[in-house]
Length: 159
Image 1 (cartoon, rainbow, N blue to C red):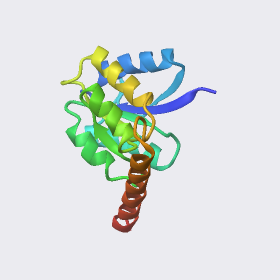
Image 2: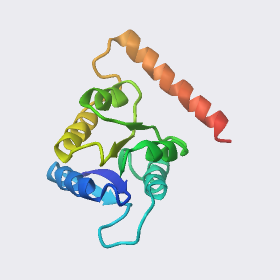
Image 3: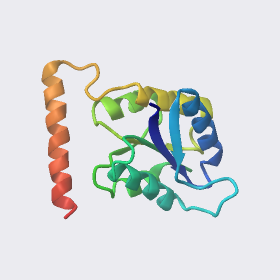
Image 4: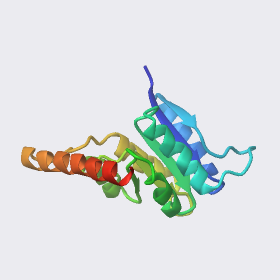
């Protein structure tokens, strides 16, 4: 069975999204695009980000990618959804740490800042990293506890 991933973008993101979809499909992912399309109606960054985040919050997907101009506004929007942990990644270290340390389930890229080959590296790094990868048992326990506590904070704040 193919792994599924959701992706969305605004106008600033269309070119990068095409490259990422092509790459992910070549890696046998089923990629569902919930953002703006080349020939479609304009979708503002916050609506594209919300569409991806809602799909993750509803547990239709385990991971998602959002692309806008810089990535900043999309992170802000996606973080408004319970169970969605977005990180704007800009190098392979942040991509790996976003998953290994924070169990990030959505990465955000800025098309104006991220060339396609680099974006592919970032996505691959993130997808190939597991939560608590590369840490000792004590640190794994610490990170797992942090993740659970964050869930508690989230439950309290999203009443």
